[in-house]
Image (tube, rainbow, N blue to C red; front, side, top):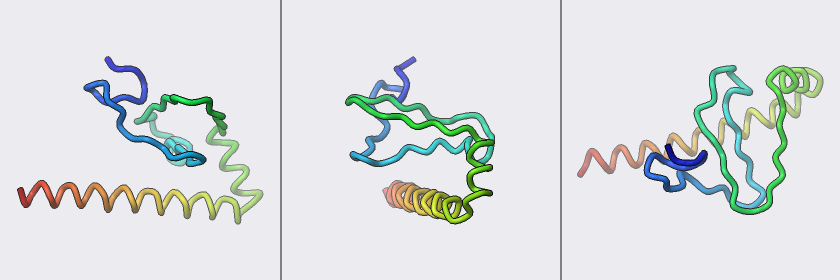
Length: 92
């Protein structure tokens, strides 16, 4: 099995740009994690537990809205890219 953050063939699945974020979805839906992360430069990792995130969003609704908006934009971007690849593959 390849190291965490690598695909089945040992290649990196994606790269995050400087100052970008990596948001595993379990903080939102409680499902098991489906991704791992590995770093190749010194990195600061901030962790927030699901219950703490929900409490924070309740106390600071604007912050919760901003986070959810950012997640929606990220998911929309990934869906567009996936759809483009799927369409290109179907066209051959």
